[in-house]
Length: 175
Image 1 (cartoon, helix red, strand yellow):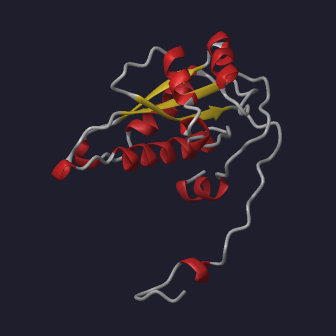
Image 2: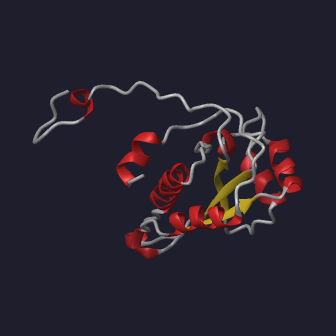
């Protein structure tokens, strides 16, 4: 599969996963793809914790309400640091977004599925703080997202996209 094929094959998967473990080698490849992402002013604000220990997974899944990724054999927890870069601006959102997309594409390339869960864990109930406590994340890092990783029980659905001409133009806006 080439990168263009992976882009078109990647969809958010919110279904159940098969009870098949994700190899440590594959988890390393996924996180290496995240590390390879660009970073504003090379501040490298994004870090990761791969969780595949069933006891720790159970604790994490236990604090996610409403529940998601209950059957995932692994979860990658995405951390960020709010480090100012150029002109006192922080590019951590751009950094972790690029890293997550690299990882999502790699997940598909390796035969797994995933979904980018962010708002669900960072909104008012602060599930991210509970996950941080479970994983002993230091205070200067913030849990920003989780990515379940596993072999999908079902094929992911292909959401309908607007036509190209409704979202992309040449030379001027034509909406």
